[in-house]
Amino acid sequence: MRATNNRQKSETLNRAAAAAEKKLKGVKSIIIQRFIRSLYFSVSPQDVVEHGVDRLAGSAVAIWYLGEKRKAGETLLRIYNPTEHLDGWTSPHSILQVVTDDMPFLVDSITAELNNRGLTTHLVVHPIIKAVRDAQGQLTRIVWPGQMDNGASAESFMSFEITRQGGLSSFKDLETSLDGVLADVRAAVEDWKPMRQRVQTIIEDMKHQSDGKSAADKAEALYFLQWAHDNHFTFLGYRDHEFKGKGAKAKVHVNPKTGLGLLRDRNKIVLSNLRHLNTIPPDIRAFVRKSGPLVIRKADVKSTVHRP
Image (tube, rainbow, N blue to C red; front, side, top):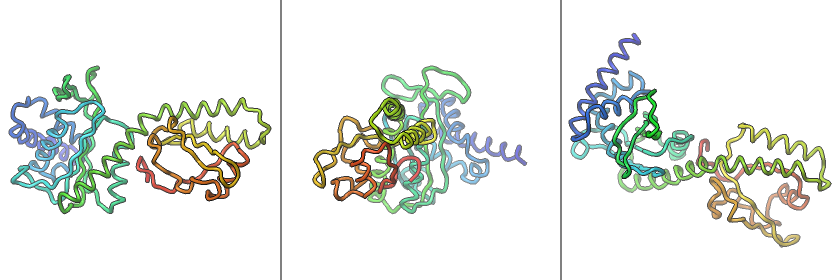
């Protein structure tokens, strides 16, 4: 049965590649064949066969055109309702397609935002394609999975079939929110190593501090920070806060040069009541006044990266 299903998948993809080739005039046949097979490599045979040649080819052509020309570091995104007149194929769902550099948390973060909006995801296609581009960002070659090519870059070509949307206004709203999510993902991934380095620096500094604080509290804080640093915690943002003033008049200031990851933007607030010493929660107020080694607290906003 499995062999039969795989054969049906292969035959369907061959026909989809032939249909896509007719629409992608001027593109070499071998590139289309490799693109189609890379695109749907992880999709189950049942889903491939049920979607049929027209939908498979139409979706592949659309995401090809979206990602045909892209600069490194650029994220391309499109949401649309395909029509026979404009796209040559139709779907009962809206189509969300993204092309960007491959990085962690992409599918998790996009799916979380869709779920947050009450949208159902009916199918996710998410291959990592090894793409070779020229100096202008034009896609010139697809490297077959398993082959080595030092000139290829790993890129995520993502296609989501989601609850059908009403039109341009809903598309624009969703695009704006997803642009923000993907920017947050990039910031968190790009600053992952600097954040880990900063935590390691804090650990080393704390080890050499002799400020009369409780040895037990210090040891516990060091143990926790090292545990988190040893790949038991996903660092998403880092920032230094400085408390200026005395007593109830003390105020919190963000050090703008210290923001990493999601906290690069000094205006992004994750503890909305961290504004004034006499209004912040008692445990944080005590932490500030006594300068204990560590306090752990939940933010009052949901994460846009990895998990909400």
